[in-house]
Length: 169
Image (cartoon, rainbow, N blue to C red; front, side, top):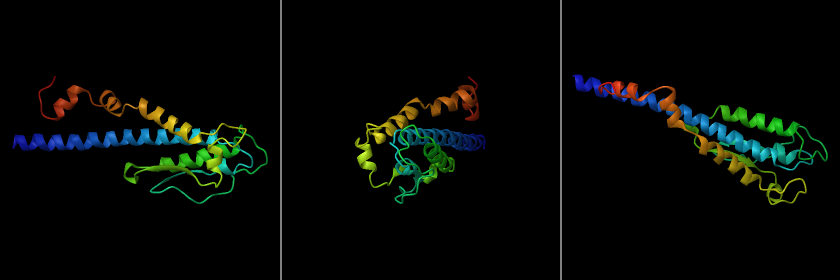
């Protein structure tokens, strides 16, 4: 009976810790995707705002439809913020609903000329929005310490050993 109770407690603890790790991991994924989106948006050259407004976050599959600029203009320039802020806010709102079970997150831009802009066709920017976005994502992920936060923040060695039925450390 005592062994069964210990294993039951251990299983309960593992499920509980798994839920905490999943929450921490979701947070890291959302933050990484948000930073990647910001890097892509802010490095996209701007004339009328179409390319900048078409960075779209999604799950399951990339969005292939294009949308009109949030704040259409003419010769807006790389420092333009209305379309940038609206695009980032839209993407972050979508990211807040993300859960691990959703699978991959896509950050896509279906503007027909986005490839040319990425290759540096605009004098406003050398391009490489994709590389800048990936670097921003890698930067967040490389600093993530999901298990470190898990142990330090909530469950020290003593508590884990006690929960699994071992003697206190």
